[in-house]
Length: 186
Figure: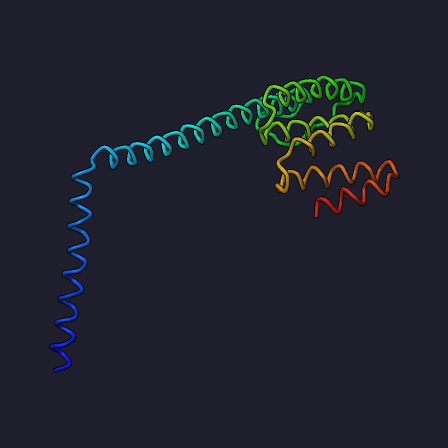
């Protein structure tokens, strides 16, 4: 007896489901404009998001390539062999300072051209490091601050820029500001 009741109940449930699908199919057949309109809207939104994502990625890729070109040119100007990632200090310290100052300008130009990208923040950080190495601590602090301001809030890149800013502030004995920067980085 239990099997017959369960069987009857399953059949009734199946008929109810079929009835719902029949009504839905009938409504779709009676209202093709609304259905096509909703489908079209979904496709337009999906296409718009895809195009926006593609453009953002393309912009970031261009910025990254520009920063990489300046980095490679800097290494070459400092006398590093092709493919090297380490800076070779020239025998003449003044040559090193001059090359660094020249490439600070190039990194800042790339950062300005590609503002709003993560690569622009990296370019500002590179400029700050070169300014610091060339002995221009004030300009380096400003570049670090600019990198922090331009990085996306809460991003790992902003944390890295804050940490480097904090170290630069510590080297100038600006302990309170350094502590705030360390706290924000954390």
